[in-house]
Image (cartoon, rainbow, N blue to C red; front, side, top):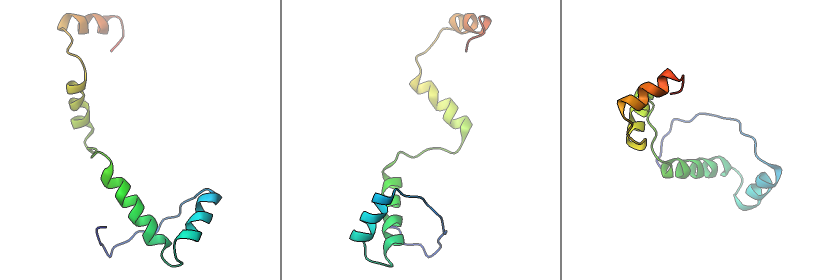
Length: 81
């Protein structure tokens, strides 16, 4: 876990059965750090997402099949994009 003394207090809601199990398995006064570690591990395993919507839009070109200019103009003329 990346250690950082700066923290942000948050309120979360958990299903009762999850919280009950959490209290049974994690020592008192350690729940916050346990949840922090779990969330951090999950976040690190997720693919990195850009916060630049233009860059995200342009990256779609790699995922979309190439279309001819004529096909694009026809689709626009029919009101579809």
